Amino acid sequence: MRILLLVHSFNSLSQRLYVELAHDGQELSIEFDINDDVTCEAVELFRPQVILAPFLKRAIPSAVWRRHLCLIVHPGPPGDRGPAALDWAILHNPQTWGVTVLQATGEMDAGPVWASAEFVMRQARKSSLYRMEVTEAAVVAVRTALRRIVAGKRPAPQSRSIHNWQPPLRQTERAIDWQRDPTSTVLRKIHSADGFPGVEDSLFGRRFRLFDAQPEGRLAGRPGEIVARRDQAICRATLDGAIWIGQLQPVTDGARDFKRPATLALGSLADDLPCSEAGDENDRPTRREIRYEERGAIGYLYFEFYNGAIGTAQCRRLREAFLQARRQPTRIIVLMGGSDFWCNGMHLHCIEAASSAADASWDNINAIDDLAQEILTTDTQLTIAALRGNTGAGGVFLALAADLVLARSGVILNPHYRNMGNLYGSEFWTYLLPRRLGQARAAALMESRLPLGAAEALAIGLIDAHAGPAADDFLALIRTRAATLGDAAQFAGRLATKRARREHDERCKPLAEYRAEELQRMRLNFYGFDPSYHIARHRFVHRAPHAWTPLHLARHRRPGFGRHPDTAGG
Image 1 (cartoon, rainbow, N blue to C red):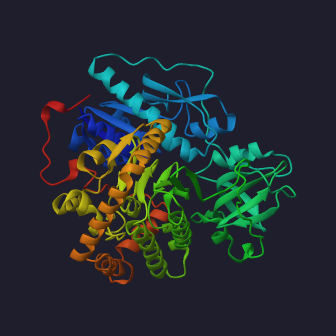
Image 2: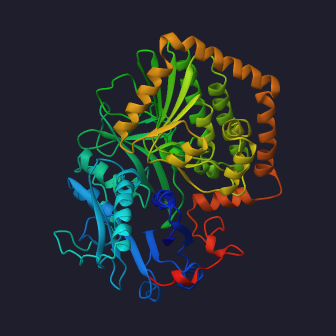
């Protein structure tokens, strides 16, 4: 089928659907929903059989839905209506929730239902639920809807169940009463707004929006009091315990700034807060950005960074943790990353907040390169990158520094940099990518700028295996492959082969040369006359609306795109 994805932005759900539908053999193109005229023009150019809207912030023009079959992906079960479905669900805490694919009509979310899928609600941030459970359910529901369309079936009338219209959530409905709300309530309120728009609150007499909340099981204090800091997060006491707040977004004169790590947003206001170490108490919840555990001859290194962004300080802490893991008497080190993201490269929000964005960018990329080099040159253990969550840009190439790359079947990989203002990239990608794909295929992959699913990444050789999408299935794969690699009878030979290959590659061209060449290009991105990177970063961080759809997404706008007259209508 010829399907146009109409989206507010090409977010994680849209990318996953694009990857899955392309794998199914559908003919796809993408258009950002900028205004009615642009949308109508895109429909005329592409002439789709189906318009799929997985992420919109406004209604589809009537001139479009009256003439074409338009499917809306709604993050709620049949009967639920409104623009804040997942927000309300997290606050109300039902046992199950769902995703509905419905047909666009003149009334929001009231059209007939083509398909739906249900999932068990997890106590988690909205952004995490959206990337995991909502996305998995959406893939199932969209595929079901398309099969029903092909089979000539009709949609079911909209159900009028216990769920009904829910208006947008206001800040007053999420407001935290620190003197009365228990920890569970505080967490649900912040979780319901994570990603966007955050929960507005007061800290040190200033207004901020709160994000990235996690429970704390040991610290306590007067309700509302900020009792500690750890890394770049702050700990705030609740009625019956405490929570960690990882990200803050300043609010000044009613206008919102961009979010950033909490202590960075607070500046000198956080200087006098006592530092708290995570400790070794695994029976109590707390915030641990980096943690390490061992099972026999296998060491597992976890790094849970918000949205996968890894700043300069985080790179240095992770490098030290990796070096410590390397000193242990293990045979395998598994780099587990985070559950939502493995890694997405440089921390653009921290860079945007710096007094010199160029200097901050330079420090950040060098810190990531230092980490990548340690992984690449490890000759005492074999290493595995286990991609439990999505990964992009420098994070992909940091993973390729490992000896084996495994991925959960539901993850999305974006192995390119150019979407960030023609950024050249580093992390030894000019060595690592051709080593896996060859020069020609590596160049084509970097040029395409399109997301990859795990199956496609495996097919081209970017990764070595995948399993899932259930987390347990992927964990079983990790443990099986780690045990096989670490088998005592074979380990010495495998390690010798690894050392020999690294020595051969070093003789052909030292890693220092790859790094120097990449950083020379990156220096031009950061300090050169072309401001594209700085403009793109600023727009990304400040969530600037799109002004057009790039040609690598909008196939229908490329010169010479041919239209098929027999595919008009729907």
